[in-house]
Length: 163
Image (cartoon, rainbow, N blue to C red; front, side, top):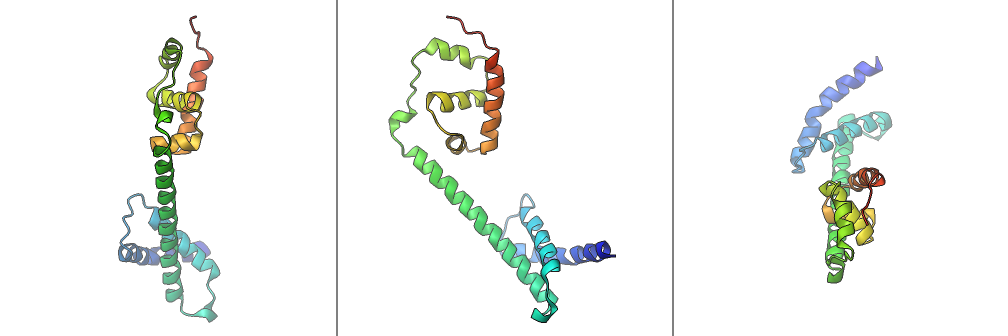
């Protein structure tokens, strides 16, 4: 019974969610904002107090504010990424220079690795950068950088270096 009521509520709320997405001029390519609107519908159904006002008004308010909160969150994330990129690009130019002293050694290390795995080795060992810094420099997530490192370590464990 409750599942049927909620399913009906979701069906009725889809137009309202799309209305607010259009009204706020949101480009919802991944469906993240629509999903956030659905979560807002669920939260509204749990927290609604009939004494506080009309259901439609409350639901609309919850959806709109949830979408605005997600816009703010995305905006803060973009600002932090931009600041990270700026701080890394404004660092001393000497950090960007190759400090490879034993070129033959690093060629042997480089050969079995993919480009991304080499990026991890290069930034992590040669330039002593953190995972977060590497992610900012390469424009990927920290999890992606961790994955590069995991695969690079696996390949490098069995590597026989020639003297």
